[in-house]
Image (cartoon, rainbow, N blue to C red; front, side, top):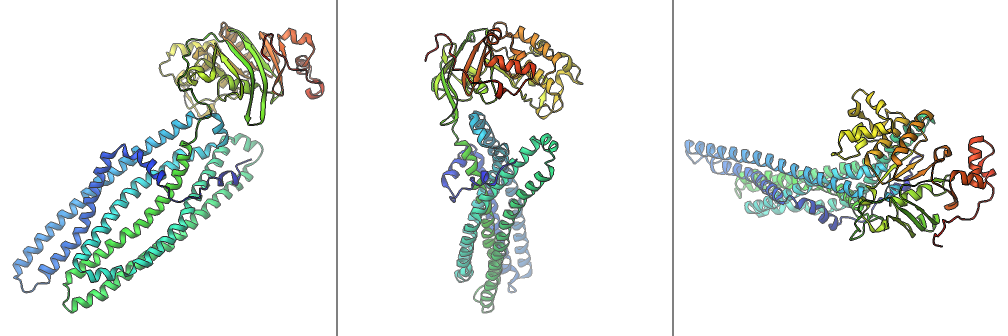
Length: 619
């Protein structure tokens, strides 16, 4: 039980920064280009205000504070004027920082919303085979954690990097203007800084990529265990599952610890370089001040600009961490967006008007994996209003027939035809809105009972919802709820019994008013009394409609117009209940075993008959 380490480590991607991923991400940002340019303008104003402040300090020292030759009044007046200018600069800096931060966060939230909607919408369009390959927790990570990483790159990374570059450029320009010799002395530590940054970038790149994969693995394992908690507790798996969760958690912890270790080395390294530069400036610049080669204000301003020079360098390293994490997340997100649906609508779908419910399977061969067919040359027809039943042991292909009829998968050979339309030639939505299905494992969504019956049709009248519930005898138990049809449904309907969930599923199918109804062992969790009520309601519902029933309980299909008996993906018998009993073949033996509880089916069933075809079916 649980997801293997190997299943997740294939997500570790080996390439570094990919400009194509960045371009694809910024296509989402470009939608808000007006806000983006406004934010950049505010950012430039904020950073230039930061650059201006030390220069005002230099002017105050050199022109007024360190000028004993000037009259006291003139010196005080100059200092007051520069103090007022400094106050204006500080106010502009605060306002620009506030507006820029607000604008950037607004862009980030909008882009995050758009990206999440794109991923969620795209996943809904993918074929079921995609979801069989990808655990729920991994996909949740794509929509939540990975999207948040991209948002952090936008709000705290890319825009801030632009500001850091502006600060660096402006600081260097002012430093060169003030004294080019001091500037060269400051740059003495740049080569070791570049060397350290290169090593840090190389080491951290793969760490962040591995981190994304391990977060996805942890989320998937957590999701799996929460969904299967009843089984976990029933089989006393708590200790083992806790051990494995701890193993995955510690593995993620060790990866985070490695990232923290390298950061703990690199950032102090940057601080040491900054302190070394300040020491060089004080040593060399102080000597020049003593020699009256440069004014004192220039040295004071230079020290401030040295800090402004190293602050972006330090922050650029932090932004690189964010960038690496975001690029690792982008690889996963756009990997999902690049997934192609295996079942797609044709370029020009055939119009599908109101159908009668005529279904034909014509020489259908199908397998979920190439070379592993689960259906072999299946041919049968269902006329409008007929009820057919599919019977056979587990793995005989019953559910696969339903999957092909709903076009969750496409046939490999042959065709499935509804009212003369090959299902591959019509839009999936047109086909499925004419089919209703009731599964053995009913899935209810959070919301109200009425919303679960309407199944997303906000315009469905309440009278239609209540009429559907009355038809399947669900109305009494629904009205017994504290809020009736407006009663809240918890996740997966956990507060309802299995029988109540199936009654709601029957009401959902009836409210849809389909032409074709599929029942996949739909009465397995209902007691005998309720089953009688359901069968009474189904007789009314199925009148004039085509129905396909999968059943292991043969008592539920006595009234079927025809029963198809499947074995190893082939139809081995076909006929009414009475006809199949009279033949004394596979169906008769299954019926005898089920109702008389004799020896196991495998021993009693005997040799499998040859494949049965309907009269006139193509070979």
